[in-house]
Length: 91
Image (cartoon, helix red, strand yellow):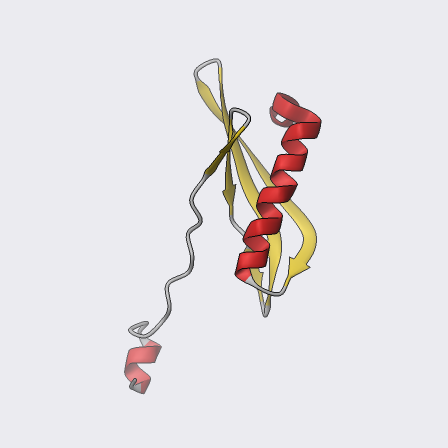
């Protein structure tokens, strides 16, 4: 691959775009944040309440070595928060 191709994005690998996961009436969208060589735990949690889609962004200090690990941990933490707080997440 040529230098110019790399410079202008021709050879860049596509970032993963995890699909949302339904859980207990909520949708979880894992969105780990890349910080250097690690990924910070992050997810977006949505729920429709009274016809309006509410959103909560979950960001934690935890970092993981791979994007796949970041996705798994983000989903697990989001499920834990839903179990503990339910719709109070949006208050």
